[in-house]
Length: 153
Image (cartoon, rainbow, N blue to C red; front, side):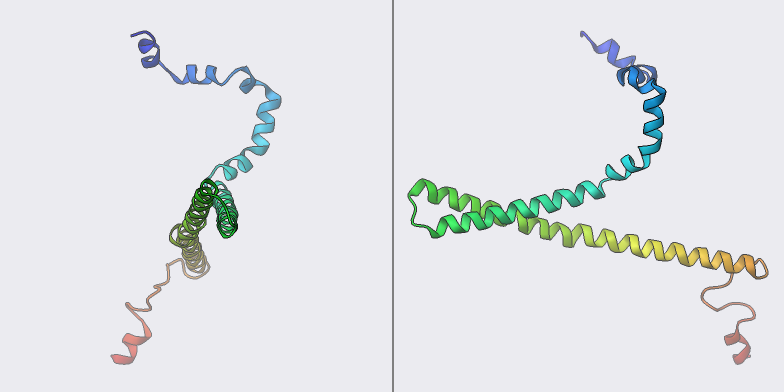
């Protein structure tokens, strides 16, 4: 039971105190304000994910090739086991990275591209509506007064 009441009484003020006195230093706050966007980008996940994938791919490829080269030498039993382990570990690492790239990274990139294109299209439609008579244009081209309805009628 020691420590439980303190944990229950944790407040934002105590969390601020845990950060230390340097958080309230004006110079550090000014520096943090200038570099906060860069810090947020670096920890957003994409940069970390990319670096993890690159490192995993390189380490896997190196281990795979090293294991293959060790397997081809005339070696004794313990070294052959190490060669097999390196070969298999390397194969698993770099092929795993390839799978992650094709099933997670590429679809996320495509999703972001499509989202940006849709946002740009919506912004262009809003801009066109503002420049015109103030009404949003009908993207399907159907509705009252459309050319298709006028030709049929």
